[in-house]
Amino acid sequence: MADYNRPLPTATPETRHFWEGTQNGELRLQRCTACKESYFPPRPFCPVCGSRAVEVYKASGKATLYSYVINHRPRPDFGTEPHSIAVVTLAEGPRMMTNIVDCPQTPEALALDMPLEVTFEKASDEISLPKFRPAKKA
Amino acid sequence: MKQKTIAVVGAAETTEMGKIPDTSQLMLHADAALNAMKDAGLTAKDIDGIATAGDSPVEVAHYLGITPTWVDGTSVGGCSFMLHVRHAAAAINEGLCNTVLITHAESGRSRVGARRFSRDPASQSGQFEVPFGITSPPTMFTIPALRYMKQYGVTEEDLAHVAVVQREWAAQNPRASFRDPITVDDVLNSKMIAWPFRMLMCCLVTDGGGALILTSAERAKDFPQKPVYILGTGESCETPMISQMEDFTSSKAFRVSGKKAFGEAGIKHADVDHLMIYDAFAHLPVYGLEDLGFCDKGEGAAFIRDGHTRPGGRLPLNTNGGGLSYMHSGMYGMYALQESVRQMRGIAPAQVPNAKISIAHGVGGMFAASGTIVFSNEAP
Image (cartoon, rainbow over the protein chains, first blue to last red):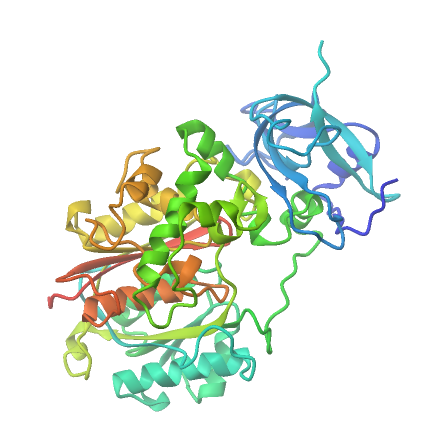
């Protein structure tokens, strides 16, 4: 377990399936059974058509790098080394914030649109955070 | 709203700005309010509408001795004061009140009696953004920029130009925090904050405040200052999470708010003599120029780099020096409004000659919300 003194999420009834998923090594999204739209963050209704007929499913974990910064300001909770804060586009459509890991935290190593795959970082007994790393070549 | 039915009749900033360690945030509200009431020739007894953001309007009203018949605590970030102007105009036109005081104050730097900034770990942002390290604006507001830069071939040098041009304006303003000229190299050699953003591409953190007083255009003629009329207004919001913006190269809230304001005002872009775009970071004016329709998509950075917004250019932008060089106590929208009012009164330190129409466009949160006010100094 990484040295976690960082702010961690508190699940709500509407998001519990997501955080239970990451604990079990699954990235769980929701989609509307009426209009088929996948969406994130979690909520028990479709943000596009308003239907409450939605289902949770396991996403592929594949994504591409949409945009990011490399934070250079030392922080008591994130350490002094520069680190990425990124937004990725999931293969299923929605975007989410994350950190890109397992690669140098440099502009050269972090090319926009590069293929990524999800990995889970255990932060506490209750919380594992979804992070993304460069996709392994198929 | 109906054009020119409402006017700004009082406007002032805090007596001091920058570093004010001997004054609490609440007193900064009062200082700005007392200055604005003096400017308008009014006392607290004359005010019957109150609005502020961040802090409670109840707190400000009670501290000043105001008993309002209209209260607005809309708090959607730094553009809240644009929304207050819009709401106040509607309220005055509806007869809910006659004379509205809008205040902003923040002990942003000294943190004397200031609010604590925190996000609930069970909020959407607390669950899905904060754990990845975005607890402050420099690592949050900046995230979309790289996508914009790649899509339109915009460079770090282009972003640096924004800061350089605004420093040119600040050099003319005795109250600006930073007035010494800077070069593109200075910006690109300043401390790295969150790549691709350097220190000089990020706004200041200061103490200060400002206040506006609005009343009907009919009454405005009887006040000591030259009235500044509200020609059009807009507001909107998009998302509390920057990761959930529809498009990282454009703000939906900007587009909706801007379009509404232009529509109400019944003006064309060529009619605008002076423009303020809330510049928390160097990419904001670029997004603003495009989303308000002054430039085509992808052209905003070149427009600034080519000198069109600098002193002597055809679209003077952020003429007080902006959040990058003038001041930024936390919710800068009030200072953008103040500069528009000064320009319309003809008393700005870097006055745009013969300016008749000014727009102040604000952002709230990190592209979360927006408000736009179109001002005119020509009587209805």
